[in-house]
Each structure stands twice: as structure tokens, then as C-alpha cells.
Length: 107
Length: 114
Image: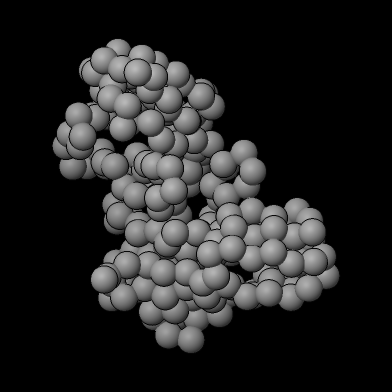
């Protein structure tokens, strides 16, 4: 079975502080991993995917197969980063989401 | 405006009623999905259709019946609504089966069963 775990339901940081949203997964094959974001009153949208190895809005995420993790990081949080973040995995033709982490960036 | 659209945005109804939620995508995608987001924001897939054929049905009660009249539409019909059906339902689409494919989400339909 494939499973995604986001251990933190809520993460609260001050503006300018570093952010790390944790994501661990369980999957027997080679997973494709994503981070989706849902800003207030907006639809869920893709933030980044591991195969692209890109940085979007200052966020990066590295797939660590040894630790089965795909943590999302940003060195300096901004207030506009406040949102709900979902880690997701595809394998066997299905996208499985983690429980989500609400990031609150305080001024 | 290319996107995934859903109607209605809000749906308030009584227990036992039957209701439908419509979804349309004009992105030319082959695959469409329904997700349920509960009150704790947990997002779970319900169904997936590829070229109008059902490919994923994640242990959803028979009261939920998806219908795909064509590739651009995936509607969700719910019979005998129960209190536990209250949630936000998201439709999504992707070019192909979700192996590395980005999924595009609709704005959601907030269903409240009284």
C-alpha cells in the first residue's frame, strides 16, 4: 500500500524564519512525489514535483529515498506563504495525499 | 478561461435527499477525478475516470455514482445523503494517468447535509 504522512497539522513561524514541512512516505516501488498548496479561498494547485528538481516561490524539496522523505523547505518564510500544504505520491496509478500541514507565517 | 469548473459551489440539503455535482474541464485532459476533503482537511480520492472509463473506485459507498458522459465531464450523483457526506468535494483532471502528471483541481463544492 502507498501512504503519505505529514506529522505536523499546524506549523507557525515568524516572517523571515526558515520553514520545513515534513513529509514521509511508504511505497514499495519508485514513487513520484509532489507538493500541492491551497491558499485561502483558492483551489488546490501544484507547487512542485521531485522529478523537476525546481525551486518554486523559494521552496525546494529533495527526495531522500533512504529516509523515505520529501520535506519542503524555504529559507525565509513570507506572510503570503500561509496556506495548506499537501504532500502527495503517485504509484500504481493513484495520487495519495498526506493529511496536510497548515503553515501560518506571522508578521 | 481554461480550467476545471464545478457546480454548484455550495450545496445544502436534508438527509435522505439525492443530489448531483457537476464537473467540466476544458483542458483536453483524458483523466478526471473526484476527491473528498473532510472537516479535518484530509483529502482522499474517491474515483478516477480515464477516457470515460472508471479506473479507480476507492471503497466508496454505492450511494455515490460517478458518470462521465464524455471526456470533458465527470459528474457525481449521491443518493440518500447522510450527515457524514458533509465535506468539500473536489474534481480534478490530468493529461494522463497520474504518473508524474500534474493534476488540475476545481474550486470545490461544499456539501452540507442537515
